[in-house]
Image (cartoon, rainbow, N blue to C red; front, side, top):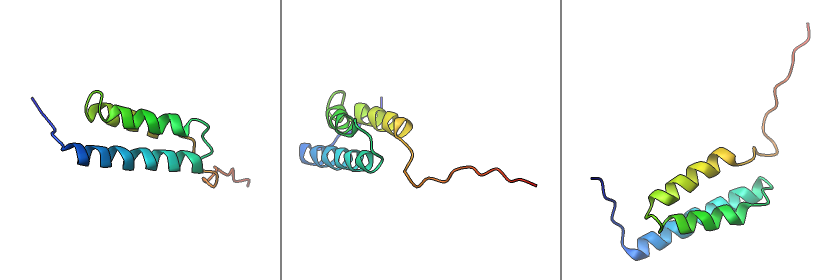
Length: 78
C-alpha cells in the first residue's frame, strides 16, 4: 500500500497554493466556475487526502477553457 503523509501546515499550504493557482488560471481564462474549482481542489486535498486534490486538479486541467490568445488553425489556399 502506498501512503503519502504530510504535516497539517504543509498540507494546508499546498491546498492554498493549488487553489490559488486554479482560481487565478480560471480567471485569466474567463471561467465563471473558477472559484468552484478552487474550493473543490482545497476540499479534495483533505477528503480523501491528496488523492481528491489530484483528481480535481486533473479534471480542471481537462475542462479549462483555452487562453484567449491561443493559436487558431489557418487554412492555406493555393
